[in-house]
View (cartoon, rainbow, N blue to C red):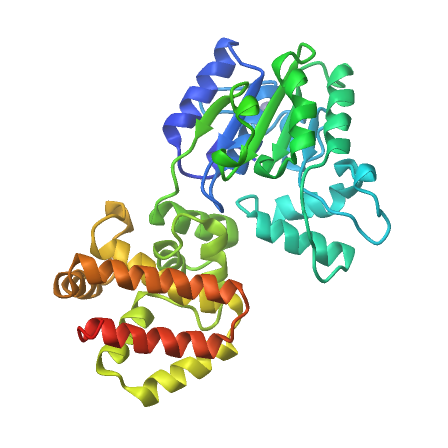
Length: 381
Ligand SMILES: [Zn+2]
C-alpha cells in the first residue's frame, strides 16, 4: 500500500516522506488513529517507502521489487505482529506466534486495511472455526520472536521493519519484554506500533517511541475510499461516509447493509418519537429487532452523529450537503430542545449502545428509548 492509494493526513505523509528522503529516521514510531481510520494504511505506506528503491516526493514508487512485495504483504524484511488467542491446536499462550497465522492476516489486509480489532477477531474466529474468542492479545512469545528477528541481518539489505498492529493489545509482559529492544535495537531496525488507543499503552513504551496521531478521515475522504477501493457507487458512498464518524469499516458496514441507517431514517424515528406514533414505532421496533447488530448499533450511532451535526461539532465537509433540509431539521431540533435536554438525549442514545452490547433484547431497547425520547421531547423528564 502506498500513501497515494488513500486520501487523508496529507501533512503527515509529507513529513514522513521528508524524514525518509533526508535519512533522519528514528527507529521507533507509534501511529495512532481512530478505529477504522488510517493508522494501519499509513504504517504500510511508510514501510513501503522505507524499503523502496526509488522513493520520491509522493512516497514509494510502487514499481520496484520491494514495493511489489509490500503490495502482497510478503516482503521478507517486514514482520507483522497482531493479537491472537489460543486455538484448538495451540492451547498454550506461550506457543502463540504470528508467523503461523500469516494466511488469515494477509487476507485481512487485502480485504480491508482500514479494519478494526473487531474485524480481525471475526476473521480469526472464522479461520480457526471458533465461535467465541477471548483474550485476543499480543503475547510475550511474540515479543520474543521480534527480539530474535531484529537481531538477524536484513534479507534485502535495507530496513528490517516490525509492524506491531493493535499495540494497545500488547499484554503487559509482552510490552515489558520489548522495552529494551525498542530503545536500542540492532542497527537497521524500525518499529512501527499501530494503535487506536494511545492511553492503553504502558507509559514506559510510549516514552520510547515517536508518536504520530493522525486526524480522522472526513466524510468525503471516507466516501472517496469507498468509491475507489471498494467500488461502491457515489451516492451510497457519500451517505455512508457521512454517518461513519471517519471509520471506513463502519462506512462499509453501513453501505453493505440492505436496510442501512442514514440521517433520513433517524429524522423519521425522532418524528415518530415526538408524536408517539405507536403503530409506526412498533413496526420500526420489529424491523430493528429483525436486523443485524450493525444496523441496530447504527441507529443509535447515526442518531448521535445527527446530534453532533446539529451542534456544529462535525467538520464542515461532514455536513449533509446532499440534503440541506435535513441539516436544517437537526439544527432546529437542537434549538427547540435546548442544551440540557440535548445532553440527556445523548446519554440515552449512548446507553442504548451499551445495552445492545450486553445482548439485552433489541426490540425492548428500541421501544424503551423511543418512549424515553418522547418524554424528554414533551418536557416530561
Ligand atoms: Zn519502490
